Length: 232
Image (tube, rainbow, N blue to C red; front, side):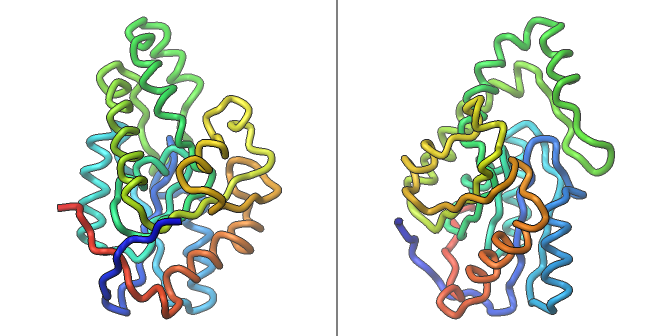
């Protein structure tokens, strides 16, 4: 695994930025579980999740503004949000069910989305829950941006850093190729673990696997150094 150069940060900066997946948002389940877990144990960790735009470039600008504001110690990316998370340079990354191949499907769908019923059908198939959730836009102008979005994320990955992922053994998206462990291994080697669950990490694994890994990276002495950002 490649590691980035570290520059000492303020020990009081223990914010975890959680980048939700497609149709997720400020009230997504996993970050709420993490916040409750750390709070109940009086851990000096704060989990922040905010709803960002489905348009990958608008979403990127929103997320980068939050990184500048929050100066997070760790970034956690879930599902399609893992691609946005990867574009954040030089901060340790942890991923849940990273869907690194999903943008390939989305930008290929862009041309089909010009057909009126296709756009409407996508909206019916992928419909976010009520609440503070990301609004999905399957228009050509939005979907075509996912090609460059993925290219930049992969370029960022090649620059090096700390990357670790969790994959569910019963993740139904692995059958369709949206989630591929093979893609992960090509980029990051064996820096991942499997859990006996679905794409949407179950509560027991959030507590037994994800939360301890976040704590380890954010709080251990050898991780009081976090990479200088190239965001600006």
